[in-house]
Image (cartoon, rainbow, N blue to C red; front, side):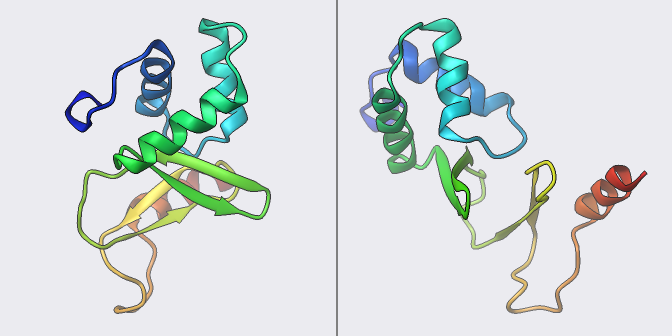
Amino acid sequence: MESNGLRITSQRRWIAELFSVSTGLLLPRQVRAYVSKRIPGVSNDTVYRNLRLLMEINLIEKFDFPEGLRFKLKCSSDRHHHHLICIKCLQTFPMDYCPLDNAIGLPEAFSDHLAQIRS
């Protein structure tokens, strides 16, 4: 954050911590609940403003679902790629190829994940 000119506030520190340990997608209300346990009274405006700022500096990315926006830590890869998202648990699985350019197949990690949730 500092290298992008953002001061590291306590709200941003807690939001960054949450995203660093999360394996799935987070709703803004989940982010607010996490931060409000540490900083009682944190506002929705503060959470949304910080989510927007973290997106602007490419630390997190936004996914638009019919039930609302969800966020996750941005992948370290700068190359074009896609994610497969489990609609049951919302865990994301990066795809090492573009499904539009190649024959569509499931990444091994997602196939293993499907086997786990089916058993």
